Image (cartoon, one colour):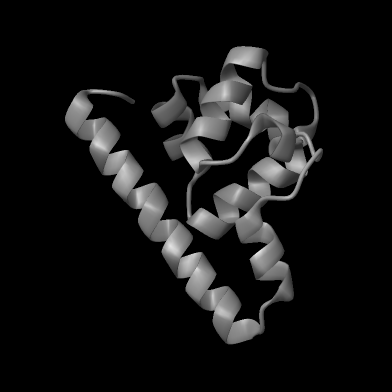
Amino acid sequence: MTKKLFELMDINGVSAYRLAKDIGVSTGNVADWKSGRATPKFEALLKIADYFGVTTDYLLGRQQTEIQALFDMGNESQQNEILKFSRIIVGAKAESDSDKGVG
């Protein structure tokens, strides 16, 4: 789970601070997840999945998203376009949530 989470954070340019603030956990929680000292509780797992637009099964390594499958099949140029698009989606979601007073 941790590997998928930090891959998503890296791909989308989301810092531990930003993730913690946006999903309502402490930066210490995120640090514990990264180090393997702890795993996200169910509620945090749901928030993480919603935040990145993936399923909890994906985070838990139980399925591959369509975007990940496309990424894996693409050449470097296509992969860069997918990364750019996913950053746009996460940025738009963060702005929308901010407008609603979420995070």
